[in-house]
Length: 88
Image 1 (tube, rainbow, N blue to C red):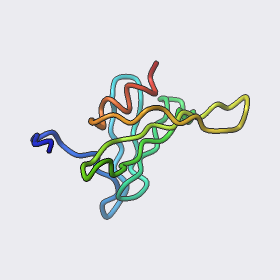
Image 2: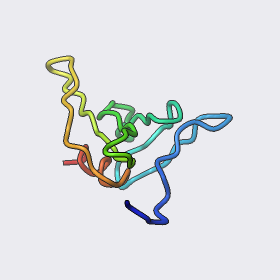
Image 3: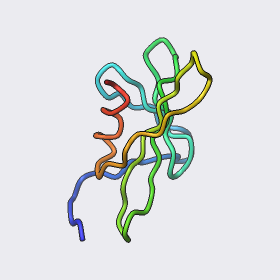
Image 4: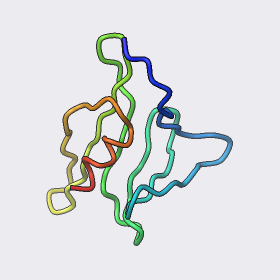
């Protein structure tokens, strides 16, 4: 079992919270989903919380505008790592 004090991906409080992660902006959409955009508003993808083997993991889905679809990336154990997956 993973025991860390790392802040969990926080999504949705009384009003949406916008955060920055490098050159990306993260907007909480709901309790388990965040939208990741560039500074100009272009959607890069989404990060959501998923249960894996009784623990919490994070999944990034990159938006491919030319194909109008999302590509699911591998699950990672950190919300920051999931956002970094979208950066590259």
